[in-house]
Image 1 (tube, rainbow, N blue to C red):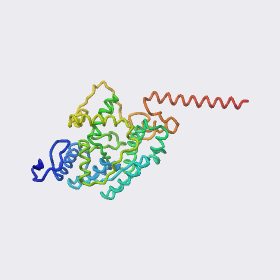
Image 2 (cartoon, rainbow, N blue to C red):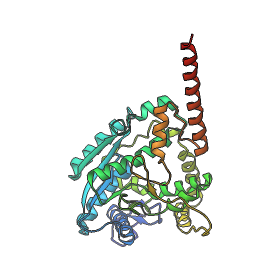
Image 3 (spheres, one colour):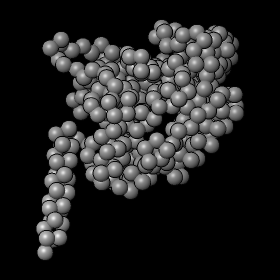
Image 4 (cartoon, helix red, strand yellow):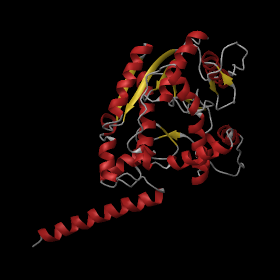
Length: 344
C-alpha cells in the first residue's frame, strides 16, 4: 500500500524528512523547507526592508540553496531586499576555479550581481602557495581566517547591510563540538548566534538563514529542485580538524536523529559567570577590520608568511613572540658577524 503525504494533500509521499520524520510529497517538502527558513528569518529579524544583502557564494550546495531560497522568499513575502553574490577565490587549483564557474552560472540563473575577491590580490598569497610553505597540517587555519576577513573586505567594497552565509544546522553543531573539545569559551558562546558582528559602525553583520536546516534536507532540496551546484570537496579538507567533529556527529545522529538540534539548543542555552572575562570585539590597528585581538589573526598569519615564519600564528601568542624574538636575535647575530668580517 502506498504511503501518503502526512499533510493530507492527497499525493503520495516521496520522501521522509530526516529532521521531523514526516513523510511528504515533493511539493509539501519544498513548502515546509522554505517556510521554516522564512520563520527563521522573521523570528531572528535578520533583514531590514530595502537592504542590500550579500550572499556568500562558494558554488556548493549550501550557498546555492541559500541563493535560490532567498530569491524565492524575497519575491513570495516581499522582503524588499536587493540580493547580490559575494565569492572568495582562495587560489586552490582544481577546486575553487571550477566551483566559481558554478557561481557564475548561479549569477546568470538568479540575475544577481557577482563580486569575486581573490587571496593573491588581497594578501599576496594563494592557498596553494601557503600549503607549499606550511604543509597540510594547519592550512585550514589560514584559509578560514583569511576567508572571514576577505568576506568583510568584500562586504565593505559592495557597501552591503549584511552578509548571509550558508551555515547549516550540521555546521553549527560541529562547531559547538569543536569549541568544547578545544575549550574555547569565547567562540563557544557566540558560535550559535544567528547574527554575529555589527556591534560597531565599522563592522558588517553576518546572518545564518539556514541555521536550523539539516544538511540532508539541503541536499534533497537541491537534488529535487535540480539546482546547479559544485559537490567536490576541497582537496585540503581531509586534513581539517572539523572532519573529526563531523564524523562524531554523524555517529550520534545514527543513534539519536535529534542530536544535531539538541547540540545547537544546548549551545544557545550556555551561560557564563560574570567573573569569566571574555574577549571583546575591537578594530585591528593594522588592517582596520574587526578583531578580538591586536593585531588580528589575519595580520599575524600574514606577517608570519612574509617573515618566513609560517607557523607564527599557530598556537598561543607567547609562542609567536618567542619566534619573532629568535628571528630578530638571529638577524642581529648575522649582522654583527658581517661587521666583524668587514673589519679584517
